[in-house]
Amino acid sequence: MSVRRFVITHEPLSVESVTAAVERDVQARGEGCGGLCAFVGVVRATHKGRRVRYLEYEAFDTLALKIFEQVDAEARAAWPDARVAIHHRVGRLEIGEASVVIVAGSAHRAAAFQASRYAIERVKQIAPVWKHEFFEDGDAWVEGATADPADDRARQEAMARACA
Amino acid sequence: MRVKVRVFARLRELAGRDAWDCDVPAGASVADVWRQVARDDDRLTPFEPVVSFALNSSFASRNTPVQEGDEIAVLPPVSGG
Image (cartoon, rainbow over all chains, first blue to last red):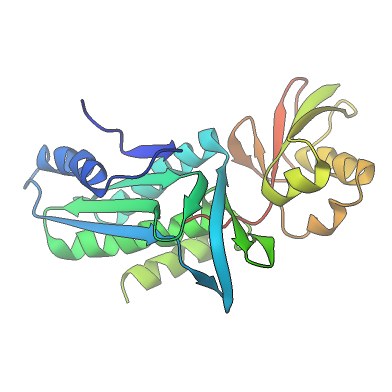
């Protein structure tokens, strides 16, 4: 069974299956697949000095999946050989568990590295996903960027980080 | 006309619900729906400068017109990854 490239799930993430989803798509094109670069976001035990007990993630699924597709399309526009897969977990996550897995594949390594960095920066900027942190002494929603997929300055900032 | 409002994350917790119906005048925009929502529940008002919006599961600007039966989602700043 083939794995979808864009997924929101309550189930634990598998780097291997995300990798396979990209590899299959890149392999079928032009020069074939020469490199895969995986980024795994993991639940950290501390946040600004406070000890984290666990996290809960919430997503607007239908919109988030569209945004993942948009991020892949943006990456493709910048690195025509590259393809990206994005799997994001929701629900309760314990310390050390993967919250997001992004794999970029391309004919050559440079585009794979850059596209994976670009994709995680864009996910953080525009994906409708929210993190709720539970500490030993309270809880807090993390509020990062105001999501605006049409904001070209944010897009350029993600590109600059990807190519740094 | 009647539209559906959806909220997420901290907005959902503050509102105490994740979706409800809202009556707005014909010709209303996304911004008009949000103003109505913030007027009905002033706990949501402080989010005015930082929210973004989706209309029927696509991102939409504040001046986008809405139709009867549309779903307007109000999104607090995101924190995925």
